[in-house]
Length: 245
Image (tube, rainbow, N blue to C red):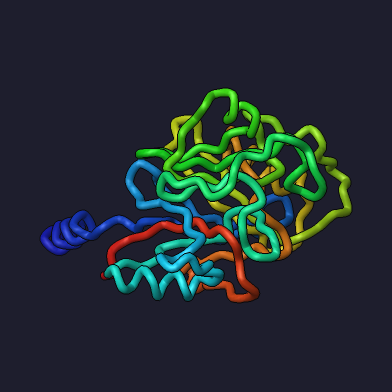
């Protein structure tokens, strides 16, 4: 028996760790799917267009493109708001190339519900920054997408979130730890308001900063859960890439 246990332990130790850990959870009477990655270890990227400038739009299109490189999507989600032509509403940087500038001012819709923020990918880390703090610090990102509103700002909920708000939608977003390693993407499995969604990141996931990505169009690709949401075309996509096995 001891030999069998040692053999099993050796096999588990030799097996590659999953790039992303996804699971379904319940919090405060609502259901969510969360996917967690270690930004210091995983290949986390933003995607919008292929080499010909065509918007990917769907997880399947991105998967097809990655397969040609011998890679696959371990996880993906929509990652920020966009115009009718799928171009980003605010700052968008991919592979060090900026497609859209930072928008610091208030405006209509959820994006303009200040404070909003930026999801920034740098070497070995991922961070959510409030937009003005990001601008004033002159932070440089390899990949970045601006969205809004912020859900959690330095451990506090967005000041305009109301506990009794009647605005309920399926929502998705991202939160990051202070050291930039722990990054958690979440999507609600039932309609929630902003206050509920923000508390998921602050009170359950214990993340100091979190950013809203979108509502009605929220979608997730989580092969580990047998999930890959389809629908109309998306704009920016965030994904974790790994070699095909």
